[in-house]
Length: 498
Image (cartoon, rainbow, N blue to C red):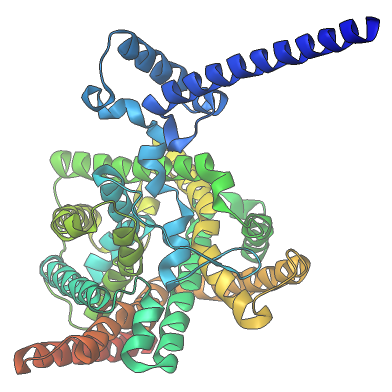
């Protein structure tokens, strides 16, 4: 009897436990349905992660109020669906920069999938603007003086138009082949050797940008009086020591907020330059001596302008990341037109204001002892320092792939790769040390030797091999190939000429 009672008691306990589990499961299912009705930022279903995101408490409260009032999800404002960080992520997202070579790699050389269908209109606008607007804009006033204000203004628009047309050719190659990588398109068009040529050009252009950053930082430091404390070689050494650990970073996602801050500092600096130059022009007027055209040095302007429009490799991954990639081209044309207008206004304002006294980096023309100007130069130093890993990582990943191949055991080559990155940064520092005195020529050389093939020669050549059918299309493609070659030869000649 006791055994029977014990068995009955045990069965009752089991039945009660099952009932409690069933009730708990019902509650979890109900919570999951409510969570999915207003899925938090980034697709996370965890309340903790949703609330932790910037503005998370506010968005969750608004969704809860809307749900209590019976407002369906499709009628709620779209701004409730994502945080500010997600909207501005294209400004800081390394995915676009990792995939400039047509591949995304993890730290061991393993392929990662390209970004697909994640970005809306705002994110795409920010990504395109970020691809073209950066520190290179500050080189334009000095370049305008090299070419002459009239020649530079008109020819900048010509270069931009040719750049946009070649981007259209590259997008046509992508649509024809279904490939999203620059290197993949090169291989489909002409084989493996052109693919390697594209990769080499892109890697050198990225390293060239890092060298320009180092020279830029050293000149800003010099303007702040640091050469009174240390010598120029010591200054470059300090910059290299600071950049080496930053370039050890394997994923920029850990630095998103830092890089976003760097972008805001760059925008602040550009706005400050426009503020100072506009004030000078209104109060004092233009510089007394301004050349409309300078044929003896216009090649330096052309090379610098091509360097400034270096964003073409990012266009393919940006389009592939759109939710509606068919809308990319009309959107790109509008954003790119605004970028070109900014470039023309910025170059004209700085060159007309400072005239023959304009520096290669126009920030050096700001008042030496003005507190705001000092803050702008210091902010730019910090911004370029923090942005350096963003330009170094894509090229660094590829050189590691060339040397170490795909690493099968995760992390086994970490310190060998760190040693390689250290050597690369030191070599870039050496070039910056000895090339700083010829900064304008260096920018023009990089623009011609590395960026002109990427911007003009490769897209037209690939389109000729993959898409051109009529005689007119073939003639246009051949014209742009020859234009790119002529630009390369002419600018390199003026860059190295005594």
